[in-house]
Length: 120
Image (tube, rainbow, N blue to C red; front, side, top):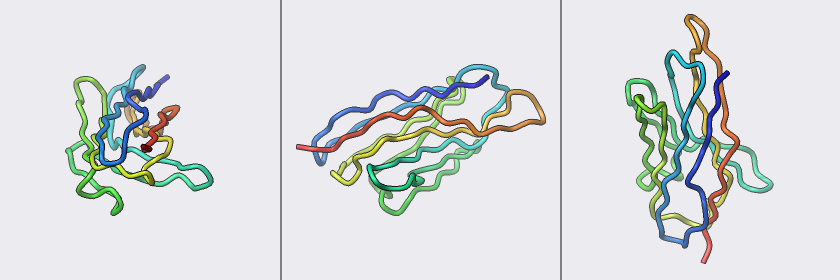
């Protein structure tokens, strides 16, 4: 079994910065794509940023230039550094990972979410 546990969410003022983390644990042989999604109240879950096993990244237009995704494969951890935060960034942020517990199988896993609130 694989678990994803997010941490680092909280309350931040507009214009501020925050870093959230997601650590994968359990039966893991390798991890392919890792990503962050978010869901605001009354809205659908949306993709924020993705990072492949090679380190290639992809960002939603609304976070380009403000958010940076990175990963530490030795720790099975993905990070999201968020800067110049706006009230509209307020949401529950979910971690995603495509994990192989044993070859040749791959499964999608989700974290439980961490709340990020941007407010003065």
